[in-house]
Every structure is written in C-alpha cells, then in structure tokens.
Image (cartoon, rainbow, N blue to C red):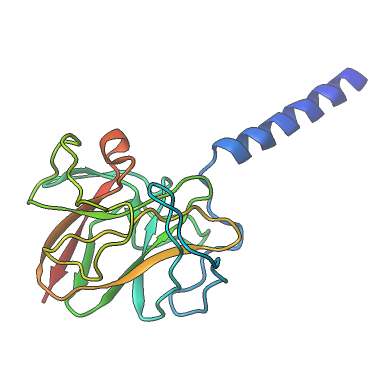
Amino acid sequence: MKANRLWFGFAAGLWLTLSAVTGCAHPFTGLPGPISTPSPVPTGSPGPSPSPGACATQDPNASIIFMSANAAPTVDPKFGPIFGYTNGIDSSQQPLPTTIITVATGVHLQFVNYDFNQTHSAASIAGISFPPPSPNPFPSGAAQPIGAAISSSPWSTGLIQAVTSFYCFSQSFTTPAVGTYLFGDLQTYGITNTRDIIIVHP
C-alpha cells in the first residue's frame, strides 16, 4: 500500500512537471475582452533581435487575432494548410481552430500571443500563394515591428513574447485597402505551416 502511494505521488509529480514544460496552454485567467483594460506591460527597452520586442498595450477598438499553437490547423481549398492564428476563443478560453481572417476596410487589428512557452509573430508575405520557406519570404528586419497597416507594404508584429503574468500585444494595424494579404510566423512558418491570410473587403 505504501509503495502504491509513493508511486502515485511520483507519477502525479511527473505529470505536472511535463505539463508545465511541454504545454502551450492558455493562461488560467483568460484573455481580457477586446474592450477591457489590459494587464500591465513591462517597462524598459526591447532586446536586440531575435529577442522579443516591448509589448504594446491593447487597442480597445481593435479586433484581436490570437496567436497560439493550440489554434488547430485547417486546410483551405485555395491556400492549403493554415495554422496558429484565430480570431476567437471558446467559452473555456481555448483558441478556436485557425481560420482566414476576414474584415472590412477601416478597422483595426491587433495580434496577441496566447501561449505561455513560445514567442510568436505575424509578418507579411508578398504574392498570392504561400512560397517555400527558403529563400526567406519575410521582409527585412521583420524580427522587430514594421509598419502599422495591413497592405501591400511590408509589415510585421516583430517577435511577441510569451505570456507571463500579462498578455503581450502587437502594435495596432489599420486595414486601409481591399485585398488578400498573406502572413506567417518568422520562426515556424517552414516547420509547422504557421501561416494565415487576412482578407480585407469593402
């Protein structure tokens, strides 16, 4: 009996340790609503590339795009596999499956890292279909924030740090022009097809 209790305690401890180390779970508190006040952000200057930049504050007028390894992949008939980005979470605060982001012109979009243990990013990719990962399809300097508009000009969130005691947001982007805009993650685009599409309509 004593041996069984010791084994159970050891197994429970091992499971908790592995869960903490390997999981990409969302924070227990859930993300603040898009119009609520964000948690405090860190102070100080951003580190050099490829370290994450400083967190932006949440734009109360922006629609949120969640960046998470828990946003299940989807295969789109036109664009192929997409993964890692979604515009919603369910009632349990879990990311919904990856979906093409469709918005009207003139709205604001903001990306948030929804994972505890990895940085994420979203950077523009030129063209009408996803290119191979080599040569590098991303704009120069994309490890740091570039631009403030989802348009034909290069843009990037830069590397967004993982969740700690707060959520880290990108800069707020505008959607000034109708079009189809491809983007992906600087670190995992070629590994896990971490990529998606924003369609801006009139």
